[in-house]
Length: 190
Image (tube, rainbow, N blue to C red):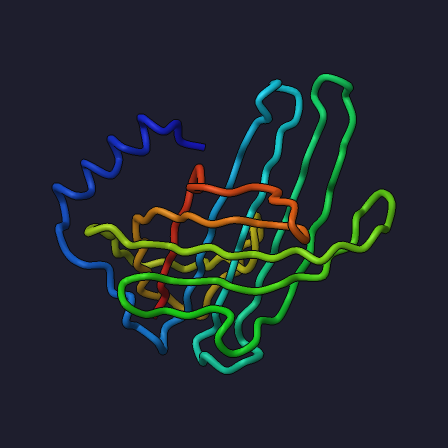
């Protein structure tokens, strides 16, 4: 995990290498968008971590867009887990869009708590904004889901776009986390 100052230095270096617009218009390409949100309560006790991972297949049919959402809240002062949920969802048309230089996720996800099996409905809204830089290279492995890579049939051209993500995750009227993501990226594979 890059520290923020390291991330900014990385952005400056990449900006010097390629000052081009990230190719978001590649509608036929495979795309992965990822954002990690992290926060700590004002009293320093409650830590919240949210990972939003979206993968669109090469054919952008309705059943080819998958969301994986993980939410963990811990009370560090009392040493206990407050919330731990993970869910996978096939997205419907319009819930994940690419246009006007940004990628937008806007959906509601049903989730079940791992420990208590309690059900939750969570509203997820995230926007990824491309900055002016990207890195392109050939890869022989592709990400399938967080922490899981698969070997591709031959080398594929992949573009990693540097970006900023901002959004919120809410349960009913209670906001679980909001604001800019700690880390975010999206990648396009041709």
